[in-house]
Length: 194
Image (cartoon, rainbow, N blue to C red; front, side, top):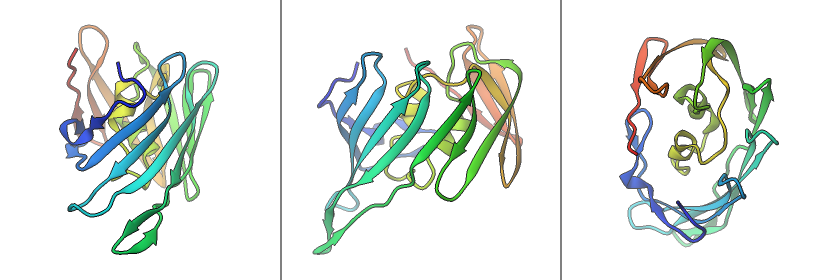
């Protein structure tokens, strides 16, 4: 269990799509009474230079679904200049337990569903990937896959539309957790450690 003031060195945690987040530290994690992250401070240090910092804030609906994520840039000094990191805010629209739309400043992503039940309401990679527009180098994406950002959809998306359609398929472990997700023929294998 992660408590406020705990630190996670995200470089030891594999990020989806075989990318490792390096030089990321998460601190000042605040959670609601249900254990969902409501706020956290993220530091990113590159090549021993001064840290880039941002505070991420999360909001949820009554069912525990993520409805918004806002990255608030904080001042930092880089090469003796005052800088800011800019982030896109994300708004999520849910209907009947399923995420149907993610809106950012520059784009809208929509999801279609078939009858594939999401037994543990996991965030599949196809959704988690689009919850991270323009912040992948600064945000520990494992939070979505670990369930720390609330309840995922009741069903699993059959397609994602962003400019064009991306088809999604799934394979499952015996207990009903996702073992493999296939998006447009590209396979992403899930591994669990309990």
